[in-house]
Amino acid sequence: MRHIKKTILAAGVIAAASAYSALAIDISGAGATFPYPVYAKWADTYKKETGNGLNYQSIGSGGGIKQITAKTVTFGASDMPLKAEQLEKDGLVQFPTVLGGVVPVINVEGVKPGDVVLDGAVLGDIFLGKIKTWDDPAIKKLNASVKLPAQPIVVVHRSDGSGTTFLFTDYLSKVNTEWKSKVGANTAVEWPVGIGAKGNEGVANNVGQTKGSIGYVEYAYAKQNKLTNTKLVNKDGKSVAPTAESFMAAAANANWEGTPGFGVVLTNEPGAESWPLAGATFILMHKQAQDAAASREALKFFEWAYGKGGKMAQDLDYVPMPDKVVGVIKRSWASQIKDKDGKPLLALSN
Image (cartoon, rainbow, N blue to C red; front, side, top):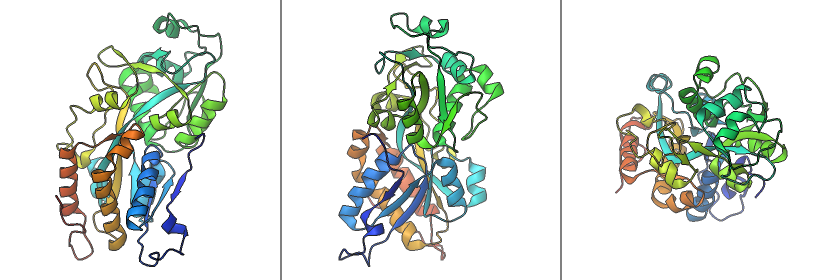
């Protein structure tokens, strides 16, 4: 599939002809493009099982945060976890759904996925505009056996507020001191060079169409668009490929329970097998539900996804949350997400 649609419109949102449509509850969500492929798959299967639909707008983490804060959707989605003080200020609950990885993708003739290895210092210098051609000595030093052309590098980055950008720039800030001092980490930054594209799908399309380019996307987008990903040198000095196993290795020592709002950031984690650009994607909901029925159905959807959606996530190269963490997340729902009368929206289940 060359393109990934930007909006999930499960059948219940647009089809009123089904026998149960009058009773169906539709959930609205907006935000991160990072998890869109798995949310689309979950929504389609959940619709078939329950008759309830999901309208999810894949508009970027920044947009998702704005919409849930404005109370225009049932849930927001962000790949950048919000800090405890912001969650408290806006009356929000935050929890992770799946783990995944951000990957550098390139369009260099004759180069296949995994042929090129980059480290954090070189990757940062490329996006700073300091390294300008593919045959630069710094790139050649890491890739002595790869024939690289004297071709200008075209940098492609996100133009919208993006949790994928947060993970990417957070990683660069940890491994490239000049990047940290000049650009920093956020969902949107002042890019030193390059062309902007909207969403993971926009970056994927631009890299696919632009010779000599480099960008960054969530791994599922790289695979579905048949893009050439690079390997990365991790914190332990090992060259690793992006795989479900390397994403899982990055999360092996994560302290989910001890971090407010489960807001763990998994960039540049130690471990010989760890992918250095891993991360979780998060859901944001209001502690006091504006629409109790829709919020309850959203929790049922995510409960279903934790219980039945793991294989679907793995098939798309995401990593399901560990069962132990899921148990803690469900308990947080029971204690924090309530209707206007203060009653929990969803009772604990085994």
